[in-house]
Length: 330
Ligand code: 2RA
Image (cartoon, rainbow, N blue to C red; front, side, top):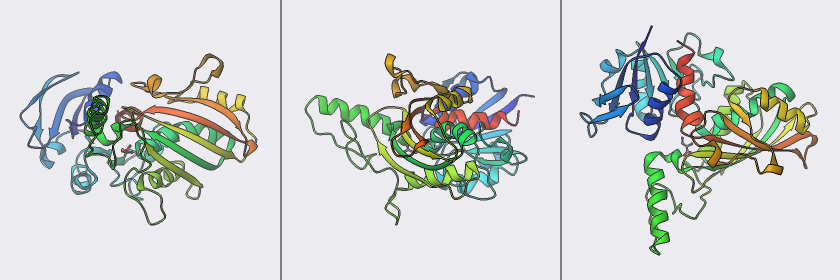
C-alpha cells in the first residue's frame, strides 16, 4: 500500500534531497506532507510529487503519516520524535537518539536487522555513514582492527546556509573584499577549518567523536579503536575521507578492491594510471560512495591498507540513507 510521507524540515538542504530520493527510489508515496517553521508555512513548493503547500508542524498532523522524516535540530527531534513515533514510523536525521541503546542506528547495507519492529530509528552522521559503508565489506572480509580517518567535509554539512556562505565568501574574496563569516568559525573560502561541532574534554571535536561512537554502534564493535580528524573544506556537497586501517587477517590491494567492487552502496573508483580516483566532482549526486586510492599500508604492511572515499553528504550522508531505512518497512 502507498504511504503517507511527512518531511519535517522540508525547506532545508536535506529536506529537498529527501523529496528527490523518494522519487528516485520509487518509494510508494501516496501523499506527501511538508512541514516547516511558521515562516515558511503557506508557501508552495514544486516537488517530484507535484506542487505542495508547506504546513505548520503539529504532532497530530505528523502522526497521521505512515512515515515521518525529521530533518531538523536534535532538540526538536528529542521533544517531538518519540511522540510522533507513537503512531508513525520516524526516521531522525539528528544526533538526538543515535547513541540511545533503545534506538537503532541503521545503515541498511550493514545492520538492517536492528530496525525490525522499531518505530523510531536514527540516521547516522554523514561522515560516519560514508566511512562505514566503505569500511564494512573490508571488516567482514579481513576484520578491521584499527581505523584512522581524516575527513574533508563539504559546506553542505552545515545546510543551505553553509553552502551559501562558501559561495558568497568566494565571490567577495575574488572581488578583493574581506570575507566575513557567520556559519563557520572562520572564513571557509580558500581556507580549511579543522573544527566541526564543539570541542570535547579529550581535545577531539564532537564530529570526530561521532565517527568513533557511531561506527562502533553500527558495527556492533564497542571497542574498535577509531580516531578521526574532521576538517571543513571549501566544497559544496561531498564529504571525502582518507582512511588507514589495520586488519586482523592479511589484506592485499587486489583483495580489498574485490571486496569493495562486490559490496552494495560503494563503487570502486580506483585506476590511478588513468587518473581515476574518488573526488567530490565524481561523487556529487551519486548514490554510491566512490572508493579508490587503495594501497598497501606503509605502516601495517600486509595487515593494512590506505584508501580514499568520497560520498555525497546530502545523499548517503543523509537523505538517501534515511529513505533506504524507510524502504526496509515497505
Ligand atoms: C557536518 N556532520 O558535516 C555534519 C553535518 N551533519 O557538519
